[in-house]
Length: 219
Ligand code: URA
Image (cartoon, rainbow, N blue to C red; front, side, top):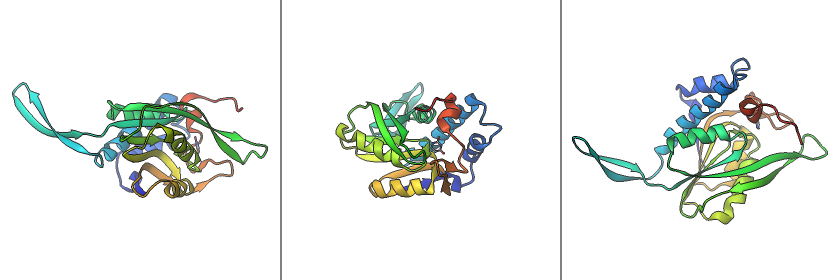
């Protein structure tokens, strides 16, 4: 897998990352969602450089302009609910993409530290020959990303796969690295060192879904 960890380079991306991690700033939900969206836009821009392009002539009021435009048929797939702001950021740039949504959640069994990923709702177009962008803002264990990919298999074989994430734990990155092919790309804003006993990324940012949309009752 090709891993592109964008915070290894100094850029404006690090300001957005710092704000979503900051306990004082992240309580502003609108700013939190918009920062995740902005990170999605930066990741989209970087990823776009690896896509396929075809020549296009554009007629301007004064003449013709030759350019090259993305020729991939893109499908953006996100995991509800935390994935929604990241999805919006990706869709702001890949605005003609088709979209897929899946609901996956951690089901805690008797032991509160053990969980399995349950996939429920799934809406997806054909993936045959298309460029699949699979987005999950928090790549903690990597299990949701892999469970989602397994659930998408009946929808066709994509031409290429790009994984997109905001913050990952090194263990989660290793897990997806072992499950996806060597041609898959991972575009990620930051990779943190550890996972807590409860499966949270450390230092991370906390619960991305709650920060974006408010608390939920556990089930
Ligand atoms: N999901 C989150 O929202 N945060 C984490 O740290 C891990 C998974």
